[in-house]
Image 1 (cartoon, rainbow, N blue to C red):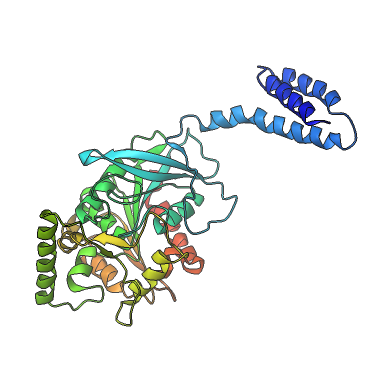
Image 2 (tube, rainbow, N blue to C red):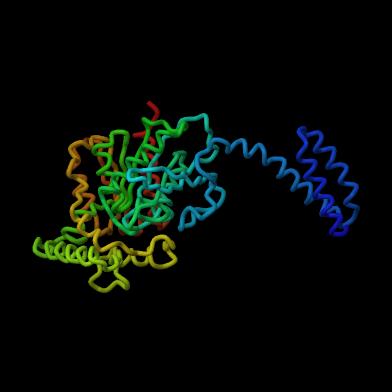
Length: 393
C-alpha cells in the first residue's frame, strides 16, 4: 500500500469516528478493510483498527474526566520514581491566597476515583527550600495509592507559586498557605470537609502542627522528620547556640536588610552548605546529597534562601499556641535522625492524649524523604493513622 493510500484510509477513519452511532463507525471500518489490500498490508490495517478503537474510546474517557479540577499534569509529579500502573491520577491545580498570590499544586486522585464519592483528603507540606515534586509529592502519591485524595503544593515564594521575592522562607506565611489549601479543598464536591488531614515533612511538619492549632478544619496531623524551624534557627540544628551568638546573627541580618534597602541585590545563601564540611550537621550533609544531586534535585529548588529570611525563621515557634492542638498527632522520626529532639519537643508540649512518636529503625532525617526501605514503613503507619482519624463519621 502506498503512502498516499494510507493517508486516504486515515481520512476515512477520521470521518468514521465522527459518526454518532457505533454501528456506523464499525461499518466504515469494514469498508476500509478492502482498501488495505492483503499480505503485509494487513498489519497496517490492524494497526489502524487499533487506533480507531483508541480514538473511539476517547469520548468516554473524556467524559470520565469531565468536572475534575485543574488540568492533567504533564510534568513528572515526583522526582523519586513511584513505579508504573499505580492508578493514581495527577491534576495540576491552582488556588489563591492572601495578597493575590497564586499557589500551584498537584492534586493526586486514587485509583478508580469516582466524582460521586466523598473522600478523605490530606495536605502534604514540603520542607523549607523544597518544592512539591520532592518529598511532599512522594508522600502525597503514596497516600493516594492508599485511597486518599492528596494535595502537594508549592508554598508562596517557591516553585511555581507566586509571591515576590522568590526564595523567601516566611514561616507564618507558610502556615497561612496551609489554611488556604484547606479553603481550596472544601470547594471540591468530592472532598468530605470533616475529613481533612495535614502532613508535613521537616519544617513542613512544624508548619502543619502550627496551622492545626487554630485551623480546626484540620482533623488530624502527621509529621515526618518534623522540625520547628524557629527553634532550629535560634539554637542551631544540633542545639546549644548561646543567646549572644543568636543576637549577633540577627544584627548581621538587619545590617544586610539595610544594604538591600539602599540598593544592593537581595542576598541568597545556601540552605545546605555547598559543599558540606566535617562541621556540617548530618542532616545538612545528607540534605546536600538530596537537594544538589540527581537523587532528589529539582530545577525549581536550587538550595537557596534569602538571607533576610533568617530573622523571620528565628521569630517563629511551632508550639506557641499548642494548647489548642487537641486533634490526633503522629510524629514519625528516624532512629538515627539528629532532629529527634525537635519532634520530642513538640510531642511533650501537646495537650491531647491521642499523640504518638513512631520511630523508623535505622533511618536518618533525610532517609525518610525518599528511601523506599524507610518511606514504606512511614507510609504504612500514616495510612493506618489517617484511616483511623479521618474515618467516616
